[in-house]
Amino acid sequence: MNPALLEVKDLSIHFGGLRAVDGVNFAVNRGEILGLLGPNGAGKTVTFNLISGVYKPTSGEIWFDGKRINGLPSYAIAALGLGRTFQIVKPFSTLTVLENVLVARGITRYPAPSCLWTSWKSRQEAQAAMALLDRVGLADLAQRKAGLLPLGNLRRLEIARALAVGHKLLLLDESFSGLRHEEISQLEALIRTIQQAGITVLLIEHNMRVSMALCDRIVVMEYGKKLAEGTPAVIQQDEQVIEAYLGRKGESDAS
Amino acid sequence: MSSYAITILTLIVIQAIVVCGLNVIVGYAGQISLGHAAFFGIGAYSAALLSTRGGLSFWIALPLVLIISALTGLLLGLPSLRLKHDFLAITTIGINFIVQAIFLYVPFFGGALGISGIPRIQVFGEALKGAHFLYLCLFFLGVVMAICWLFTRVFAGLACFALREEEAAATSMGISPVRFKLLAFMLGTVFAGLGGALYAHYMRFVSADDFSFPLSVSFLAMLVLGGMGSLLGPLVGALILGALPELFRPLAEFRILFYALMLLLMIRFQPGGILGESSLIRKRLFPLFLRRQP
Ligand SMILES: Nc1ncnc2c1ncn2[C@@H]1O[C@H](COP(=O)(O)OP(=O)(O)OP(=O)(O)O)[C@@H](O)[C@H]1O
Ligand SMILES: [Mg+2]
Image (cartoon, rainbow over all chains, first blue to last red; front, side, top):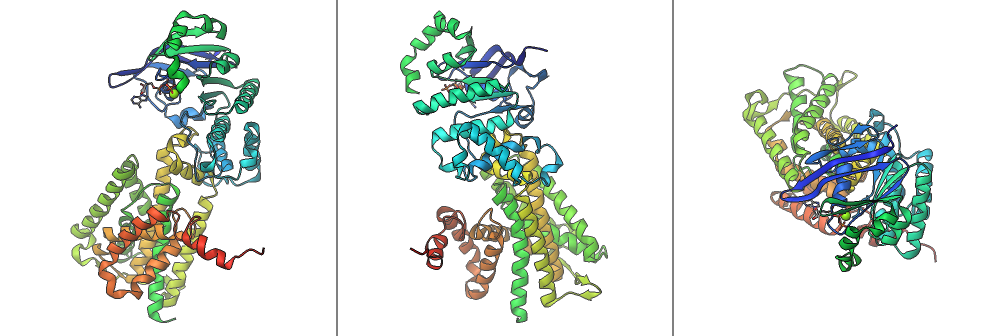
């Protein structure tokens, strides 16, 4: 079996004259946590949107679990076992926290006609969704309207929903940003248990301490291009990376 | 009950059926439709033509009417659901005007004279009129509301809610926007078509004027007043706006102005409808009756 679960080959997307992602290559191996780092505007979120099918690449290929997925619609890519969160959280605001997770639990139902007669109000569904909420520490808030939650809880809700979808790969876009100190260490622990459960994780993170501690390998982007790739130890020593970050230190601290 | 009251109630129940359909499209799936009267009209004309020129009984024609409604819903929904917000609103208004123009100018649909001589509905050999026809309409309203209730409890309905709330997130959870919006659109147009068929057999005459854009506005006004996305909302809205004009007949000329104004005010101040979660009536009036013991 190919060790890479996700492979991005020569991937590019141009918005008018802007090359938001420009000839990027990298692979995410099965079972690893790969960090995608880079200064603001480097093209990290756009890369996520390309992988998850929100945008179609201008050129290049994306392979997921032995299948070429670029060109597939978002919902079809999700159905292959790829879950994601959004940097700007997108809760289903008038639904409860539990219902938010139930929507994601429907992933296997939506393609089949049986979604017309299968109830989402069954006890098994509720139990399965509660188990996910329990994992991210939101079980107490299950009946709360999602729109009323503070950002930290919404980030965890996003992860619970992504977990229901992504039984192979999770894309986490700045899940740590806006969290309090103790929430950060809880989330680190959660991501480790996700990895132990056999799920591969690709995450975008600005917090250096967190990404260095959590990631097996790191890919650094700048101006749409890949700047460096390697283990945290190697990345920390990389001249170009240090320059890219030190040059913009004030900026990335502000974000 | 006086026959006058029965007439008003029958029309209210028919409108409630149609507004239930609009609720699936607007309330559940979050799509704007300002052309719902067109689908009401398509149901009415299909039933009228099948029963007069086609010589079919209501019961045999009904499945055909519903299929025609679903197919036109699919046909007209497919291009329009690729649009969003204002574009969708304008497109659905356009659909209303085009469908009405077709009824008016294509000779097959009877032109300006419309279609008359539509037979009464027969049940066990008896022609339904008056209160009996009202019961039949209530029966269908019950069926429609039961289907709506079931729809909110199955994954397809949940998918529609998710699309309404946050389309990008819903899509990342395996929900095809086109498929589920179309499903909601078809269900909504089928209910409109059912209401249209009942209307045709009740009035026993249809003409293009009966399905104009202002009627679409009043359907939407009923839905917004009663509460978008709620089960009882369409009935509440149809009851209030169906009865009001009868009480204020002299003001009938200003009805559409009133509806439009009410729509704006409701959406601005009471988006959940008059019985919705944050409505004044719930907050101020209900506590008077439900005062808790200290
Ligand atoms: N839909 C779009 N149309 C045009 N330009 C876009 C679009 N989406 C992103 N961009 C641009 O592409 C560039 C990369 O954006 P991206 O969101 O990927 O940055 P990022 O690396 O995620 O940064 P941050 O750390 O601030 O989230 C930016 O210049 C952004 O303005
Ligand atoms: Mg980003």
